Picture (cartoon, one colour):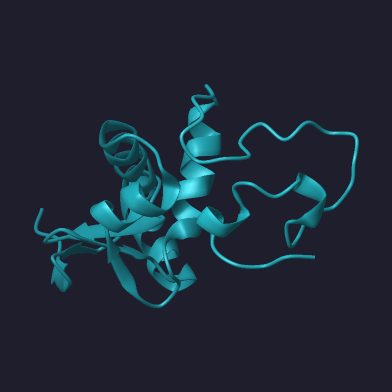
Length: 127
């Protein structure tokens, strides 16, 4: 098995790339730069898993590491933020913790909560 960067692996047969598992499914994206149309959920899954847990990154870094178009990344980040999985702030993107995600979902879907959170500040709801 060969390891290394994607650039190093470009000219290797698939069987020699680290992590290759022989199976009956077809590999859709082998090399960066191939144009394959996938579902939005698949794009979101890829982008979400490129965000380092416990740290923040930028959309530029995600574009570079995924090889996707900037518009695709921005659309995916917007969906992930709407699903309460990530937070975008000042050009930085970070994965929300389970607790943060839970509270944000409660705020969106539970209208009886007595508080709101705006820019990290917890405030009492005023009726």
